[in-house]
Image (cartoon, rainbow, N blue to C red; front, side):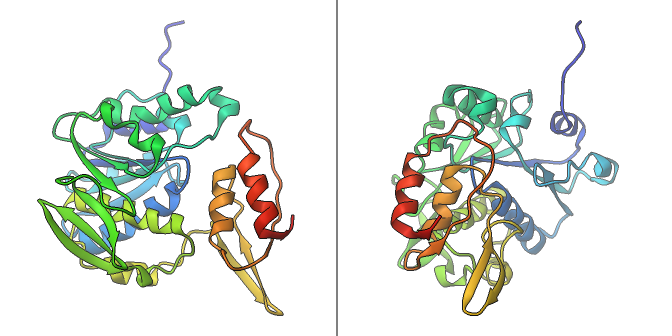
Length: 290
């Protein structure tokens, strides 16, 4: 019928008057977005930072309050991205692993939706990819602006971004290494959360914020609700709420966050047509009871 079809994210991007940071990925989006918001509060003093999108706040209600000097930080899902015809000025793809195949049908279509966060970027924009995630790294040919990397291990000489060396997270920029914090500053469990911190620090570096508050932010950040959230310890047993782990990769990350403990794993939910083999194997090895 010729009626335009859009969503709240596209409406926001069309109208917002300040630069936008967009963060997507199959896992880790909310934790990373929350951390970036905290780093903006601590390290960007020129204006206000607005955190929203798939994290639960579409920001349309506050559009009239946002000023050109402010910064908008958006968590973006594949559902939101598949309709976009505009990309954020700073766009990060944390990882791409099987998810939402009940909606997208194939990994090709799912990856294509994720790629739209980069597709409309301009030469003066900035992109952040995960050096160690094959899905994110494969998007490199689609980057049309400055590229930053993040990952546990050093990337090619001359590349810029955050990595881990000798127990520290640091930033490679202009050929120099700048230590930012110790791994021990991170209060969250699991290697996947170290990667979330690496991503957040790289995004903050790309945004040009002061990174000196990073250790304090990490020592005070205990995570986001429903993501390996410690509910209670009773009679020597710790109960964790990880109910946002709605894909096998997320549950695998949670299990691997307890390498020396036999967990009781409570599972349930709706099948999203995702591969279960690796989770089944790891659960048999690591969980005392499922």
